[in-house]
Image 1 (cartoon, helix red, strand yellow):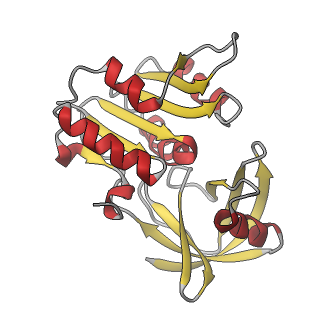
Image 2 (cartoon, one colour):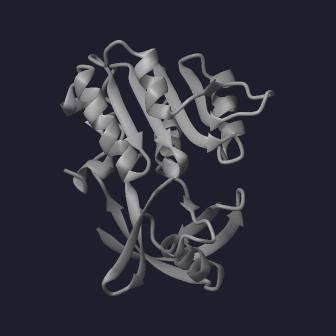
Length: 232
């Protein structure tokens, strides 16, 4: 990883629990779509966040889930809100987009795991790729699906991308699936052989997903998620 100083351009709330952060590196950051960076809070305190933007832009985008009762990410948000610059270390992670693969792609996001998926999709768009892609995004409620409009715009604009929004608690007006994310995936797929699968979300969800996917014939060499480096 490289250590880079960044100007803090924006820290704005998507909702009461998720913040959008825009950083401008003082030197260009060379990374691959799907990698992450670490916010340097202290010499021995470096906190990882997926880069939500595609490579080759002047700025870096982060989505930080930080409800008031979650002190660990809220400390980062408060530091960013009260500073003009921040140090990062980047890039990290091996779950980047395999852009040379033409296998169909299944992308799965739980909550702010969408930040990881956003980088992958925007890179596919930038490359002009038309690989068949299924995007499942699961949240507790529609309000928690903070960038729903963007995902629906992708669905409308790109025939190769199919967005499946899933919430656990839905209103009568909800246009999507109402279920637990993993339950919905198990219902929609008989098997998972043949897919490149990209997944991000809470570690417990990602771990449970891997166990379920193993029962569904997943090819683990084609299962990508940085959480797997931290859970066994």
